[in-house]
Length: 420
Image (cartoon, rainbow, N blue to C red; front, side):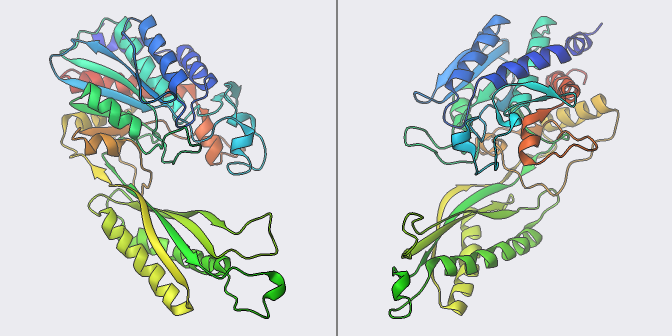
């Protein structure tokens, strides 16, 4: 039996269930991943990989371990973020992410429909379990690699700002810190989507501030009246319509950059008799590779300005976050190895997914000069089962995890010059 076949044979659905259950059971919302990072480091130590924890502050931490020769030869990072969008706390997740408490949003893994279900069981923790499984199989098979495999697990990966003053923003801050420490020559990020991709949109966030007049309901007919909320609603509908035009005209071979109006802030619910003098709304606008955030800001500002001028609205646009879209040359060895491994695992000719609009830490890796391939788990699907956005994040099929773990192992061998 070849070393590759030996490692592939060691991938176990039961072990993946165990790993996924462990990861799900430790809450790790963005900015509070430290406990899980330390637990992952312990798991790496338990299999002989010298797990390490990198603390960014008192709450957020990365973890990683190294397999193979330390300090010489080429290096490949197998990477997964570990933070979840929601916290597993109904006081924080309702009614924003769901109108009511749901079992799949709790940090406890259970079985439903033949799947593992729990907070982040698919994204990101099902992927982190596959990285752990892959390096465990490589290690137990005694794979003799002419370089290093780094298993990396990053905090602060979700595109969110801090939800409490003592926490940090996400936006790939953990990945950036990890890369600065381990310095890989190439990377594979495990993130949703059962195909290999090498091009990804970035994002820009904007705050649109609309000015009105502070007044009292009993004086609306007596004083000057201009509702900032009503004017913001006018602009929101126009921006939402325009985003489809943005996506249509900025699409490329692989990406269809979308956008949303994500939040509205205006008025005081405890003072319903009074209007606020301002109303703000936030916009996430996705940016394909080759178009920078300045161009996106000009386009949005022009659209808002045109509608505001036509309706006599006082509005300003301010950019708050910007992460450029990136791409890796598909001829890079890591992309070639991942594609050939996908074909070997599936027995099919690889076809990339098109029309993508998701942004991940792959942009952080590529912006650091690291050729990066992305490949991940498919969303679960079964007739008669309603899989909404949250459930898709929180449910994973162990059989899919087996396939992804095997693909990661094949990619390691392929990248280092062996079979896939």
